[in-house]
View (cartoon, rainbow, N blue to C red):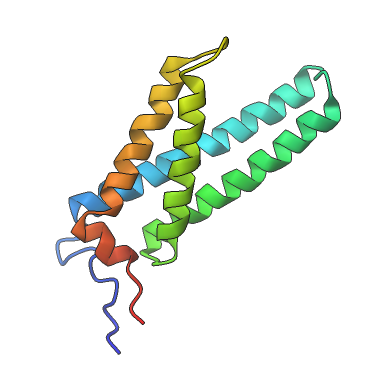
Length: 141
């Protein structure tokens, strides 16, 4: 069995990763950092403001923490070149696309938020199918 299974994810002799892999990692890390920031903001709002339903707000906060842990694990897995991140990355991008579509419509539509969710999600999905990222996220059986 070869030990260089994730050679595409490892830096080359000059210390650089392939551009598609680097872009993939940067986008996942940015998503993780934004989720961490969103969790901190939500916690501040939960403490500083009085929610209409504290139980519902607390439940949403717990779901937000679970999503933050998930995205952070994906980002760390991408940095380490792990193959298990592929399915999780696809799932997370599809969730973001669903939220983005919701942000484009309705009485409280926020198209700017929709675009900020949609464009990175499409970029990550596109990058997942590039040969370099596919090589990193492929699991040899």
